[in-house]
Length: 450
Ligand code: FES
Ligand SMILES: [Fe+2]
Image (tube, rainbow, N blue to C red; front, side, top):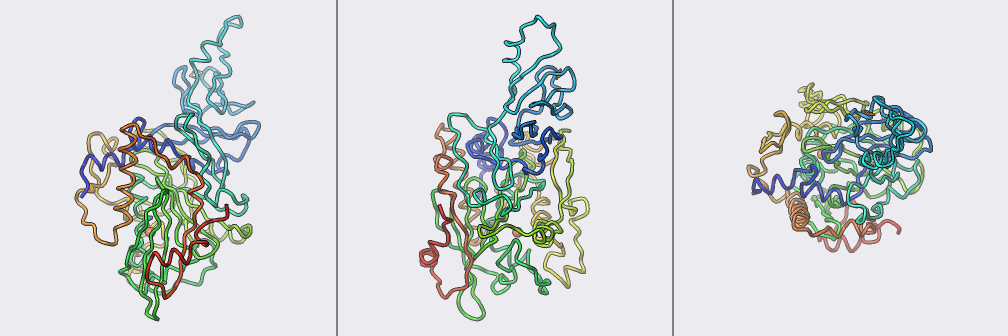
């Protein structure tokens, strides 16, 4: 049972919180490269770890992620002009580059030396990198900035990766925990009749295999990067079906696959109550074909069809993001006839099925958590966890250790070891029932080439 104090420690990510500081030691996938593809194009509004930001691409093609407000009168830079290598505030013309430096203050007499004022007008401007179709940002202290994690999808050519993101209206941990909950695959995501055969675009392990045994045995081995866990299901034909997931601190996953394409997610906190869910799929062997990309974007695998949206957060700040057409307001397209005849949930798309449950768990609005009465965290003290929740329990323990260490001034070691992220998941039907033996047998397949 989790104490209220630990629950807050796990969930809160705003500036100055221990978990927020933990996240600020890792590179975070902030926005799709394509969302700011155009040089001097429209900036996009983000909130990350409770901090309001804008992302834009300057005249040289350099991406930048900087503070959202002009330091003069606090006007929103989103409304500014992206021109000649910087954003010019549309109120009085002050201008900022991709690092947040104030490069011009034009509304003062020509003989006024603006240098000192420009220095004071510096706004946050965070280091960024582009990889895997995403712009990554590092929001921590500069002297602790690591290299990008060596995940395989960040190292393949751009046309070998598909990445997308969408809004989830929950705390980051609430969504992320669904990612390491293998037992729900057999239930929430069950199809009562096999779906039309789908080309293996995003998911190579047919979920229908989960049908064989709805009570998997969970095995987990902790690693320096997080853990690897296997859900073992008994096959009716003999042998075991293993789904082996990689989970990397603080919120990266790789879903079980036995070949390309491989996929996973990152749960990037917007603030305490909202999450940008980044999904990726990649092939190391070849580029995606245009047909496959069309197929994905039509919502045939996951994600569901996504549409660009401008979402107004409860405190009035608006963010540019994507949303599924299935939302809380339309009960995610829940169809009772479909639930009786087609699938277990009655909701069409896999990630909408997850979101429907996670976004509607009861919230506990504690000590200011959940702004304007919206949001808040699930009361983890009320849960009744069972053996199949082992990965969630372990993840919470590892995350709380990082947050408590951070509170005590102990820095996480993992960000400084980017090579540890070079892992692959696995999935196989085998007579091997012992997890250690399975891992030994699949050791070479579960490491991407250095
Ligand atoms: S508020 Fe931005 S220049 Fe005045
Ligand atoms: Fe799920």
